[in-house]
Amino acid sequence: MHEEITLTREVEAIQIPSGDLISLPAGTLVMITQALGGTYTVATNFGLARIKAENADALGIDLEAEKSKRSAAQDALAAGDIEKAVWEQLKLVYDPEIPVNIVDLGLVYDCRIEKEEGEVNVEVKMTLTAPGCGMGPTIAADAQSKILLLDGVRNARVDIVWDPVWNQDMISEEGRMKLGMI
Image (cartoon, rainbow, N blue to C red; front, top):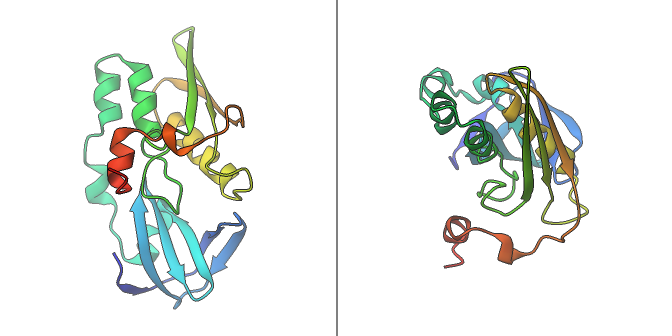
């Protein structure tokens, strides 16, 4: 982290905070400012951008070692606790500008799980720290994709809601500690 890296190939990225899709050409100098939840926030001469894990090789990162680690979500699934597994997956989703997951930020308001014919449907209601955040659809899509990685989950829907309005009091104690608030 915080060392200059030259992209080895062109990568698709999402510009922060607008949420616009951009292309970073091979040879672009970047600096990883955050590597959380399988995505990489990088500083470029064009501003901040977010690169998906599938493009980590362009940053010189080998993901094979990470894939071999057993996750808390896998442990919960093995124990038959699908709800805990979903919450653990949501803890892998980050706002690219804040080093705290969306659960500890207090952005996830509701998580409903329905089992039907051996398959699971998940519905999540979440909010954002600010209504004008251009990254909202990207963060919601991340949450949905993380949930869909769980064995047995057939459908996942993540809706962004604005009621109640988010405030800093919703941040968990762990989140406050990471942000230096306590």
